[in-house]
Image (cartoon, rainbow, N blue to C red; front, top):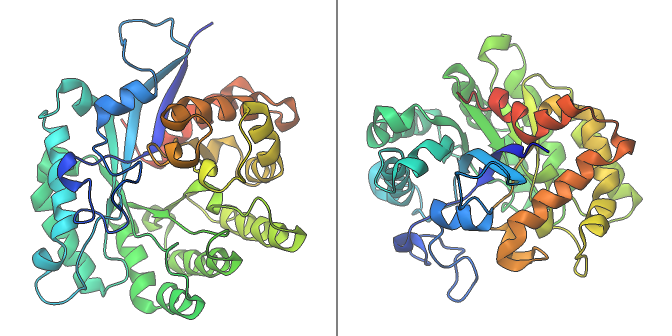
Length: 351
């Protein structure tokens, strides 16, 4: 049996120097993520140590790095000063692409989703794109496929809605589209609320309104919108409605990723987890189709609440395989390959 070939569309990396609260405000001492995570660690976690053997069940052919919400200061004054953290992130990625971690790592990093100050004025965003491009250098900048600004942590509904409905935010999304970049959507039903999904859906529609197809920003939605798997029917229906509205938009994709962070405790077996997720995944596959759904591991975040600790990459891959092989979803082999790697190639424009 041929191995499954995967493009992992959602991984995070950071060097030892950024493995602390100075590098990431959310990285408290003693937490499992507060240590270096680089591609050599990823190879071990995903069982990609022996690249000469093609008898392996899974072959990762490439990864997409997604920004890690690095620490930055309150926006004021010189951009290079208050955004030093994100610029350090760009420099770290450049060191990988330019071979400081070895040729294999450089080739493995197929795409980059960087941080961008989407909550600032359009002039600040444009300045950031210019500075980031110069900091990255041409080889690394060619691998920057899109940007993310994590919205999920804005838990005040009025503040969230005021931001995503603002003219600056909508225009910033359009600027990304005009320049050929995508935007990764990070919203959270479980910890935030269904209103996050609903407000962002309105913003996505506004960003596309009146824009030609070739200039529309591509939206790539993270982690199934982080569903509340324990909520009641009303919450489930609001999630379903938002997902359906998102799927109706052009150039919009969904990542099959991140569920370990949202699932209730006590689920350990592959079959149990796949069964728990089935109503949500079924709706995503029905709404988007496999040609707009892509695999993402969310490594190493998947280790925090994953059922196998630091081996949870493999656990998530097994869950996804069980989901895709479920005859109730009616996926063809071609459809499964779309989820494993084909959709990623298209959405992130990967060579």
